[in-house]
Amino acid sequence: MKAEFKKHILNFKRPSGTSRGVMNIKETYFLILKTEEGFGVGECGLLRGLSIDDRPDYEEKLQWVCENISLGEEKLYEALTEFPSIQFGLETAFKSLNSHNPFVLFPSEFTQGEKAIPINGLVWMGDKSFMKEQISEKLKQGFSCIKMKIGAIDFKTELELLKSIRKEFSASEVELRVDANGAFSPKEALEKLKVLSDLELHSIEQPIKQGQWQEMARLCEETPLPIALDEELIGIFPEEEKVKLINTIKPQYIILKPSLIGGFRGSDAWIALAEKYNAGWWITSALESNVGLNAISQYTFTKNSKLPQGLGTGSLYTNNIESPLEVSNGALHYEPFGNWDFQF
Image 1: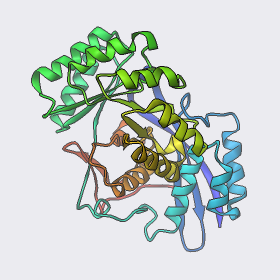
Image 2 (image 1 turned 90 degrees about the horizontal axis):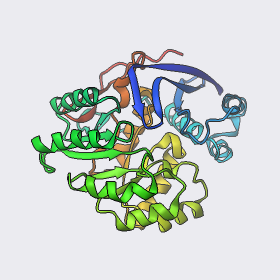
Image 3 (image 1 turned 60 degrees about the horizontal axis):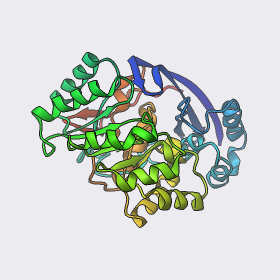
Image 4 (image 1 turned 90 degrees about the vertical axis):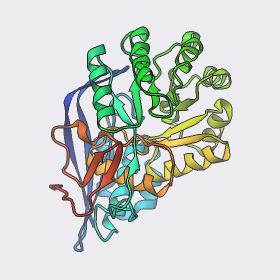
């Protein structure tokens, strides 16, 4: 078996804003395994400024994986604890190599085109008119769950936007989620949550910055609005640390991004804990290309979650990998006879 990696720069169709800044490009890496029988591919979806493995030795570690591929998936996975996005790429590449079709990793009614995955429509940060335009676009496209990133423009304007949706659509017609990306200070957070809860939101992601376990625990205890942990899970590797985090904070939900938490195994571990400690969960992509999104979507379908998932980021780029994944009527579909255009 031979292994190599290739860097790919994804270009956003339009600059995409979060409370951490605006992105124009997103770099990613493909791990490619080749044997005489065929090939396998996995995406190592590094997210600059957020991934715990955003380190100067990232490419060096990828090179090490390629040179030591004969160690096999299990040993390599264990050696990559501090590189969760490479763990995800590795798991996917081996699954791809061992599959009948390198892009069908978890055969199901989803990959057969018989069932779709309900997803949220994502509204990026920007000025009021840009956010308003995105909201109307998502509603026209048939989304019944909208996730809005907040914390970049002033809170009053964000509230007005949310109120404008609620004037038109009740909570039973359109589910609203907000993602603060840690934008609130612990001092002001509870007041803001009270104001937001009047709008019958489904939940808020990461109201305050990660790492403040006691403040987050207090918020989760007192909040009138369910809280979902997102960035909080990044960099929590040992099982006992995961247990300690869930037990201390007692969140209403956790959000799983396989590229940031150690791929399928990492996600399985968090799901088991969430179910043990009565927290809800859903799965979200982390701006991967269609290669990573495909793997995450197929895995997600096998988990039988009833909640809308965060899997709609495939249409963000001008130079994504062509794939059979399509978003329509607020759901992600897989067209079994669609084409993959992956060059290596």
